[in-house]
Length: 448
Image (cartoon, rainbow, N blue to C red):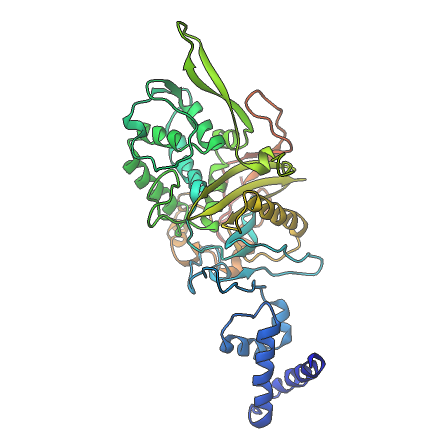
């Protein structure tokens, strides 16, 4: 049967190059062929027959060069038909978007509802899967919180925590162990945010920033500047709240923006630190306890046999009931710096890390060879003059056709440097130093 349909395929592809003959028995053969393709081509399975027919009419060469799409599990939630096209038209399409070229390996198998892997320096998106699907972000939203609040608070500022500071935290929130009546520096609090994903630390920092409501409003404004249009902020800590969503694309924007801040880079790459506890009785001396980063690609997981990923330098992980596991990470291999975001893979504490690692492995092999399918756009505030207005439009001022050009060029926004192990940061591999420079839309690039 398969051989018979292979012959039918050969005849019908040739037939389709001859206009004006779509009738009679040949048309019935084509209809039968379309059904066979829809059942046997994973890239087309689950698409409407009309879409499959269009693909067949376009010829087999188009099928070979089109982005590959995952076969959908009918029991799983499906992405919306229309999504944002910020960063390029292909990124607004459902399914896996990748333009493989000779020498580029096939993508690894994944279960995540959404993921994206990009070049952190140029912004080129190497591949993506439902990149703009709005999903619950969990604690990866804390990257946007840090982007918004960190530049405003001096790290040495000290604050004595009040009960009001901790009011309104969700039941079951992750905590670093902050106590009312004790003083903490801003630096202590940020370590609590990044290492232990402490919602208590987020709420204290929000209080210092004028309160939760003010912070949420400012986070939403920051997301708008970053062109993170998929993001709606309800709670600054990423706790499950009705209407609170982001996307793999937006989370990558948040990470990329944060990595331009030296303090952000330091906190997100810290594996372990001492966190202040109670004062010793009758003494001004204060006890402390160790906190370890819950990012298992950074710290490893001896129980599960998961080793730190080579060259990893953060950024943030998360988990909630609605979001499942979420993760954004940045890694450097021989000067190639990649960002990966994975949202809601199959259940399992380490699955999100395994899938992120497999995508990074693929990305380091594909970088410089695979044709980009989009780009991570620059913030509106980083665009000169009229480019800022253009960036606010559909596609962030960058179409899929110009995505490669928009993110390419020498210099980029990154430089790499080594980091030594310190008392508060033990990092295996390469750490990343970032210059304040963003890739600009085509025609508005500058060097410096």
